[in-house]
Image: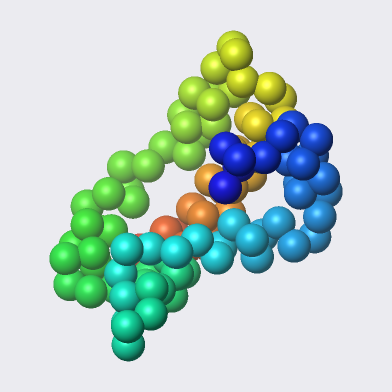
Length: 103
């Protein structure tokens, strides 16, 4: 979503208390009962292949390294860097990590 926003809009969104909810409502390619599911819903009870991928992948994620990569991009504005780091933190902390712990 951030790629469609201006830096001003990003700053406003970051200051909004609804940022967490907005970032968690990302639709996946999976569908249940003919409706596309959100990632947060899929990761609550992941299908077998996804559960195996979570087991393999999540332990390899180095969140600090990801933050450093984003922060080191010279042509990206600070607002976009903040947005990406916060979005990644939310998705890792509220979707991936809990899914890994449940498996």
